[in-house]
Image (tube, rainbow, N blue to C red; front, side, top):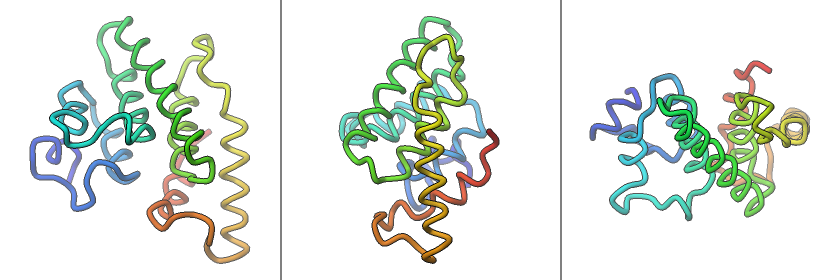
Length: 154
């Protein structure tokens, strides 16, 4: 089921605050109404879900029509993802989403300062995961990150 059908009420079984839902949404044009469907009307709070709020704001920055709106959403996306990483530095989801955002940002914005750090972090975890079979230190909700990381082209 696509994100667009979820946004209009059908919904994936896991909801929008998963890596799977985010990467599905990233395959389609993303609008303010999609963002509102996720974070509006008290469903989810941007402040209590800064990682996903930042990731979805990044999609608004990518697909926005107004240059000013795109810039504001890019800055907000960066700030929210940085907050998510600060709150839980060991969760690879936030590093992956921040890396995805920062690799798509134009360098002149100055919002891409964590690319090498996040790549190194994720590569270390991936290597450790390969050596140990699975990570004991990562929450179970975070265990699907490698399949998305491996698909990214840098």
